Length: 165
Image (cartoon, rainbow, N blue to C red):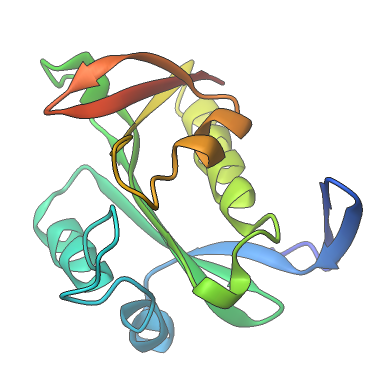
């Protein structure tokens, strides 16, 4: 059952009240998720959303979710839950996150991170990881650091961050 109370998002100098939800991908929200940036050919430090959706379809450990703000799909997050994975960085964490350009800097990405952390706790997991391209001009590094991720190394040429949940 969905909580009808709005989510209060607090930031530097602002407070927003939004109805924020995270939902599994469905026939009803898939088209809106696929329209999220980046699209093929965009210069973004994350894979196109369509690629992420396709990967979720063939990867049984993937946890793809639409992020809904005030009834509108504004983002996509895909986590992974694979406790037996030999690479510790891939046992639990965020694989992809995309937020619509006009919805950024409104707390939607932070909400998604909090929802992945909540799911990790529900599964008995005490930490999640994320990789980001620290050298890209539009790197999400600052965002992940503000969310509490701490850099713990590099993997495949990307920065590896960890959040204790």
